Amino acid sequence: MSSNEESPTLSRRFQSILAGIRSNRGPQGKNDRAGELEVPPPPDTPVAIDEPYVSPALRIGAAWSWRIIVVVAAAAIILWGMAHVTVVVIPLLIALLISALLSPVCAALVRVGFPRALAAATTFLGTLALVVGLLTLVGQQLVAGFSELWEAGQQGFQSIIDWALDNPFGLDSTIIVTAFQDAVDEITAWVQQNSSAIASNAAAFTSSAGTFVTMLLLVLFTTFFFLYDGRRIFEWSIKLLPKPARERSKGAALRGWQTLVQYVRVQIFVAFIDAVGIALVAAFLGLPLVIPLGVLVFLASFIPVVGAVATGILAVLIALVAQGFWPAVIMLLGVLAVQQIESNVLQPLIMGKAVSVHPLGVVLAVAAGGFTFGILGALFAVPVVAVLNTMILYLSGRDIFAEAEERNRLQGPGKLTRLWRRIKRSFSGEPRERDADAMVSQAAGVPSGAAAAAGAAGEALVAEKRQQNIAGAPQLGDDPAPETGIPAEGASGLAPDAGAAAENPPGAQPATPSAGQQPDADAIDDSDEPDAGGEDGSGRSPARG
Image (tube, rainbow, N blue to C red; front, top):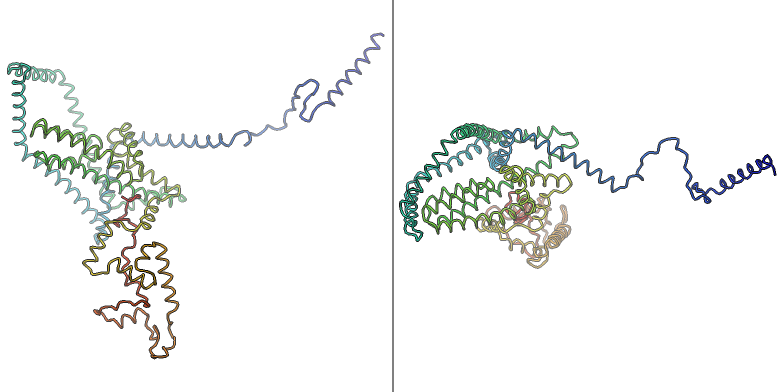
C-alpha cells in the first residue's frame, strides 16, 4: 500500500480516537482512559471569597483577636499618657479615694439640712482638722517621750559595750574605740569624696519636695470640688459619651462608685485592725510612745508594702532601745503576726468580699500593680480591678448589688439588725417579733409561729386568709344585723379603721383581737422586714459579711 493511501486511513483513525476520548469523559471532566483531570475553563468573573472558604472557628478567633489587639493598644496608649502627667493623675486618683470615704458624710449633712457648699466645707475642713490633730498628737507624744527614749538608748548602747567587753572573745576598750573611730573617719571621707553627688541629690530632693507640695494642694482642691460639685461633674462626663450609650454607662459608673466606697471603708477597717494589734503588743511589752506608734501604723497602712514595713521596723527599734533584745524579738514576732493576718486573712477575705473580687484576684492585682508601677500601682490595683469588675458585669447584664439586695431580702435581717430592733422595742414598748407573729398567725387561723417558720409560704397563707376575711365581711350599705339592729361594719360611713379609732379614743388601751377578728395590718410591727441595705441598713457589700 502506498503512502498516499495510508494518510487518509491514519487521519480517520486519529479522529475516531478523539471521538472515543470525548465520549468517555465523566461528569467531572475525568478521562477514564488517561486517568487525568481536565483543566476547567477560566471563570468569566473572579470567584468571591465567601463563608465556605473561612471556617466559623477561624472567623470567630480573628474577630476576637483584632478586638483584643485594639483594646490592649488603647489601654497602652492611655497608660503611656498617664505616665507623663503623673503630677495630675496621682492627685486625681487620691482625691477620688478620699471623696469615696467622705461622700456619705457630706450626703448625710445635706439630708439634715446643710447647704451643699456648707456640707462640703464642713466635711472637708473637719477631716483636715482630724488628720492634722492626729499628726500633732503624734508629734507631741514623740517630743514628750524622746528624752526618756534617748536615755534608754544610751543605756542600751552602754550595755552592748559592756557585753562586748565581758564576752569571751577577748575584746577590750581600745579595740572598740579604735573601731568606732575608724567608722567615723570612713564616713567623713565618703562625705568629702561625694560632696557633689550629695549636693545634686539635695537639689533633686528640693525639687521633689516642691512637686509633693503641688500634688498635695491638688489633692485638697480636687477633693473639695468632688464633694461640692461631684454630681454635675459626673453628669458632664456622661454627656461626653454617645447618646445611646449614656444610660448604661451611667448605671455602670454608679455601680463602680459604690464599689469604690465600700473598698475605702474596708481599707480603713483593715488599717484600724493593724494599728490596734501593734499598739496592743507594744502596750503589753510596756513600751513608750504606744499612741503615736498606733497612729503612725494606721496612717501608714494606706501605703501598701512600704507603710507596714516602715512602721514595723520602727516598732522593733523602739522595743530594742527601750527594753532590750528579747522584747524586740517579741515585738518583731507580733508585727509579723499582725501583718500575716492582714495579708492572708483580712485583705483576701474581707476585701475580696467587699469588692466582689476573688481573694486570688486581690493578691494577683496587688502583685501585678506593685511590680508594674511600684507603690502607687499596689495602692490603686485593688480598687481599679474592683471598679472595672463591677462595671463590666453591669454592662454584661449582671448587677451584683441588686443580687446582694435580693439575697439579703430572702435571708432576712442580720444579727446586728435584729439586736438593734430588740433594743428599740424594749424601750418603746412595741410588741416583740414573736408576739406580732402570734397575732398574725392567730388572725390567719394558723398555729403561732408557723408563718415565720414557713417563710414565704406562711406569708402567702396569711395574705390569703386576710383576703378571705375581707371578702366575707359586711360591705358598706348592708342591712343591720337582724337580731341586734346594730349596723354592720362600715354602715355608719366610717372606714373599719376609723370605726376602731372611734371605739378606742386616744390614750385608751386597744382591745386584743379575738380569734375571729381581723387585726389592723398597720398595728402589727413589720420592722423585721429585711431592708435593701442588708444587715446594717446602710448599703451592704455585694457579699454578706
